Length: 608
Image (cartoon, rainbow, N blue to C red; front, side, top):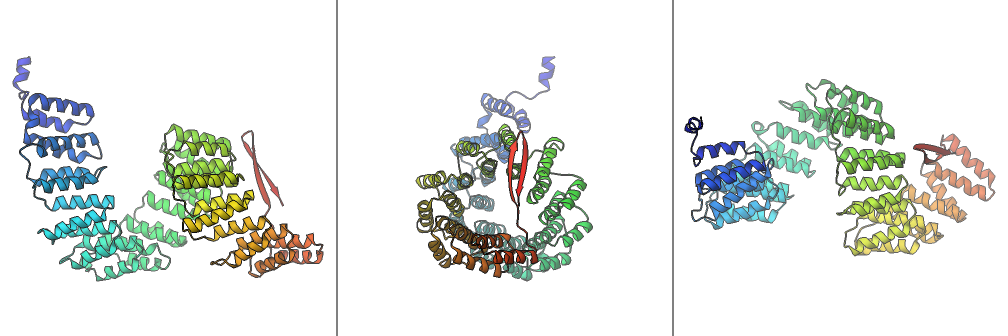
């Protein structure tokens, strides 16, 4: 029986069974078996077979990286290092592609250099793959060197390579260079025009894109061209009507066309126009539904958004995120958590980082520490990384739920912290009145040579104002302006006014307001007015209050503060006059509100 079977099989050292193994190699165990066979049969020295291995495995870099790595090792060992170097660029290009489209594109550039040093002729595919690697890495200088190589070679006029160059310069943000290449092209195709138009649109230069669109021969326009133009104009408030006109003129439309137009309407609050298109479009996908749900949510029409959500034939994570976000934006925090629970338990979808950030925001607004701890455990069990926005949201949630200790433990546990993590922690310390700790964090940022941003200084200044740290606040403000060259914004000035005014330095606060290079808003004036009321600066406070009221403001705090100032001075006639003004303008005092969690339940208290 064994003899019979053997007579129908190829010999052990035959190349055919080994070639068959290439197609069945799926795991590292399969690869080890193949490697052992190549060594024991001596076929590893067969150039034809190693070529097949490289071609079969090099393209598997994204799905099975271990196969691509094996192919590269075989290539370097038996094709580059051997005496009989391969002069055919085909095999080199396969390996270069495994790098340029893989996880380490810089190696594609090293391999191109090795290719040139080895005397292997470089063809247009070698160059295009190297340009792809430069695009992914943002290496414009290296791309320019390859551009120079092209000019010296005979391949300069190749349309495909010129399109690759345009793509490189656009990806790296050098639109001017891309346009120079475009203008010097002896011939252009749809890809040339579409690349330039898309580049202009993504950089916000929609007018330049429109000019090129008008110059583009009509027969070269395709769906990509029309969709780029519609997407560009639809994002601008003054461009939606132009987008609508282009949409109507399109010879054919796809889902991207419909979704871009609906997205433009939604972004600019034209929900009825969006609904009109939504109702007549021939086919919808989950993106279409998510755009509409998001649009209704942003307009406060959460019930309509929920009706659409319930009508969806199929839901994905993006649709659930849109619904949860709509609820959170409109303060329906418990409903957002219910949608999350439904997604997690009944739809069997896996929440993504955005889902969790929305949920953490909802819990933060509810102030439910018990739920915060449960959600934190959920995140840890599923091994979500905290190095990004999820860690920031977790710190913020614990701070708003009243546990600065939990927030600090999360912060300390994050190894690679971004400035956003520091900002979230500083903001939490500010809310809890821990100004000295917040200021100490700023000093830590300075010692570690981390670059702070304007949010960092808003947090620290806010903390200083809550804790009465005048010197620290002044130092922080000067550090921001002089060392970090950050121009103060309204929030920074508002915090400084609060710091000075709270400490009783009313005159200094007033001088700061009057010397601001930007127009102070009503928040800054009300902050100043509150301090005037607190420190019995009646005359100054009265002038500020009247100024705010004359501005046509309908914020009740200005009226209440003025009324209280009159009352503290026994000026009851003026108190009645201010109260009468409030009634006539139908301005009601916003009640104070506080929450407390007891035995897993949140109790809300209002003070009118």
